[in-house]
Image (cartoon, rainbow, N blue to C red; front, top):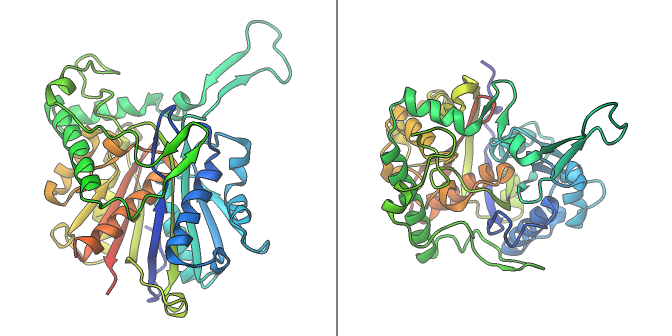
Length: 397
């Protein structure tokens, strides 16, 4: 298998990052262009660092479903809107739910290839803004009605298998014997951990408030302050009778962006930076698309094997909570202790803006290593269509 990241002995660092609060579906951020969400997160990042954007050599923009026509210019427009020199290049990345991690791995490779010293990696998604598409309108139809398609609904369905993502999760529940009760309990804990992280002030260091015409968005809007298990257990399964996927056991549909600065060791010294973590390595691997949620298992195993590490050597794991059943199955297969997993809550509570989530996972993990004084952390995500992606971070010395 081909390695995902180049290993030439040069160290690359995740210096710092900031994100917008994640606005609930139809909430405060519903009308904000995904590029502008990334601009806001990036401005917060540069303000925090006390640096000008012109130190950046390359911009990488992660996005899954362009919800505005401007979004297809994402990487380039992000550079221009931040006031970077017109010579600063940028491009877009779409590896579905793995996009936010992939842009970080791309940044590492650019630096190790000596094509850049400092890279801005920003993931963004506005799911509220995803349009209703009209097919047949340009040239008309000979007979029958024009076809309308909900881009959001179709994005969450794998046309190769014909399965909505939720049905791949239901299949995992059967194969890996994960009960509805475990899913409900896990979802409750995701919200409780996110609330505790907020209470302790852990998230202040990564969120930059956003003001819009719909009002001010200062914190993640999808997190529920009070969650009762009996209320979750009373919900009807959404996709399969007697199934495990409910509105409470699936990741939240939200809007938001997350930006991180990735830099070489020489750039860290030149600009006198204090990075959060070293980006040690990363991996991507394909899996059966009908159980796409198992992707983190082989992605994490391969990553650890290549770096002569075992699960017990890793202090913290951030695995995207696409569905409770999916995280539980992955955790069971990897034999993870829950005390190491998503310790500040996950996407069931915070929400899952597709192109931004992976970047948030990596940023949150890097901050956890610093705040909690841990050495190694792994962030991972499953990917629709059947892939898994992972990145290994090490606390900066």
